[in-house]
Length: 492
Image (cartoon, rainbow, N blue to C red; front, side, top):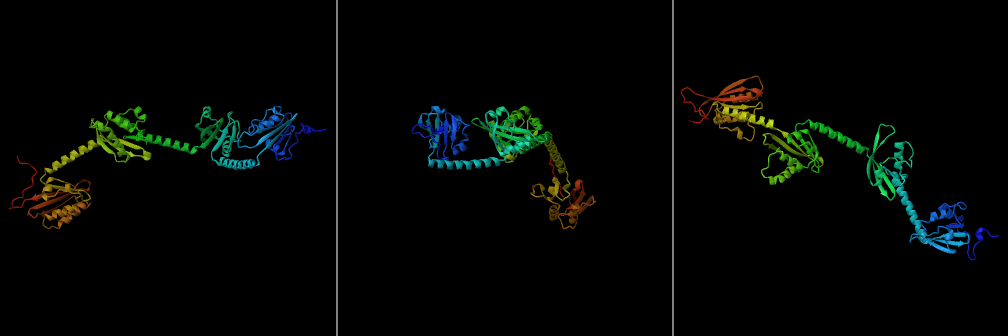
């Protein structure tokens, strides 16, 4: 009696392939009765257990025209080509009665090429695995149902660190917002460590490829700490600047106001909401002009160019001006460059300082005018021997004008000039010593004779701050006409 495998139609052999290296299947109706060793290993099919449907599921991607049922195949032998045109493999389907045999026939040359491509793909897969497992940040894939289908070694380490267990396919390492899954983007997430004393921060990016979502988590703890330190530093600066009486306006590299203090509001009378809206440099100066907190430009059409020049000068650190306002106030305005292209403007109300300076100058002019009315020649030297003051009588007596000298005039320079107009006298050295001496002597005098024959009494006295005043008075000689005193008064 013939076996089931020997019950074949005349002229048709349904015996299993002689070469177990080939892919071959034998079915009775839809049940798998035999599979070659190669076929069983490649497709994980077990005779007596698997059926036609299981075989077709494994081959249909490569051979889409494979019949869904063995009865759908024609009697005799038919061929089923592969999907890919470059794939020369075919399936020989031989049907005889209840039996169906499938043999896979491949071109040996193409098989060798496919084997080479397969090896190259294996090498590429190994390279990709090494790259993904050595990447310091976590990477994982999530399918349409939200399950993790793949992850790298960094993901395993991160999961163990945060959850103290091996990765769970159903529960990803981060519970990312649902809206984040719907489109590609970035989200910063925090993770509480098991010790409840430390929080880690990660930037999670997602990319959608078909129905697969690929996530990347980058450790940004250093960035978060740096941002927190920067915020604290800015807050500290803001608190410090809030106590300053000088108005401060810092503009970033884009020309927008980035930082200001309350004094700026008081000095410019600009509203806080305007400054908080981060105005540009142009609008900032325009608004100051509208508030009349800067000198009105003589030519409004050149105003924009003037402001452009101001900004350019501030960028180089060359801008410093004094603004005299209509109210009588005086502002000192300076511009300084800051790192990363920023510019800082400082506005200081120096009205009181200017008033004091003007009063001081007026008092000096008054004192000078008063001293110039004296007939006695007066000259004052500082504690270091530098001439600081002289009156009109001194200039006329000695023909000297210290104000026109480029360098400081000292007591030595003055004594040399005096000696040129006088007869020799050893006491001049004593006068120099007295001016430069910090001793307890309060006064000293000497008499000098001019080349004209007139005698001059020189009186030296110590005054405040270690300074010394020297007075020269002409002496009238008995029996001789008096020298004409220099006069600074006009005749009636």
